[in-house]
Length: 160
Image (cartoon, rainbow, N blue to C red; front, side, top):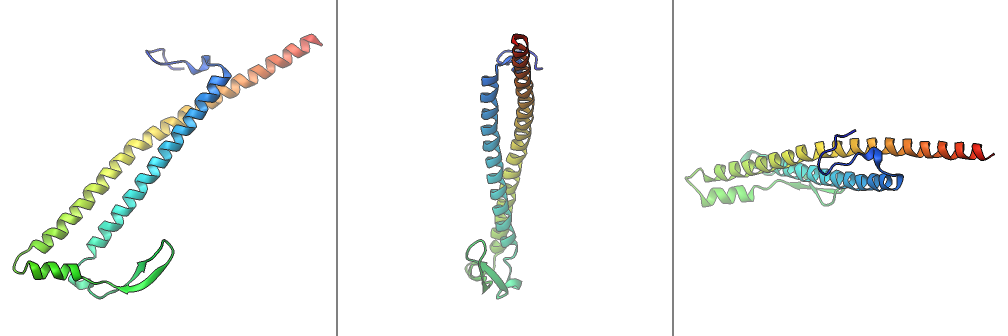
């Protein structure tokens, strides 16, 4: 088992009710980490989609047919309008600022995707550790329950 350091407890020495409580606590922590990981994946996906949309903003894609999402399962036909791109061009004639805005937008989404990915990489090992801890705790709990049942059966056999 674990070495006895400050704040550590040998879970093999815990009684059955405390082991049950520890399993429940670990299940709650696993649920929290899983939920956090799912939220991070969702955020990552949204940033990737936004980055992909920004990559399509160019004069070559003006008036192309697209499907516009109304809900997660319903889309309507539409056309890509580069009104904002053209507006930037009109306001910034003679300068290369439009391309800089697009480049900065792409860099922004790359930074956000990298940040979310790093956070996911931090959560995944914690989640794996909690799963291992729960598995070990469950094994010890099952052994203790089996030992208790066997000792009760042995005590019942002695009385007979």
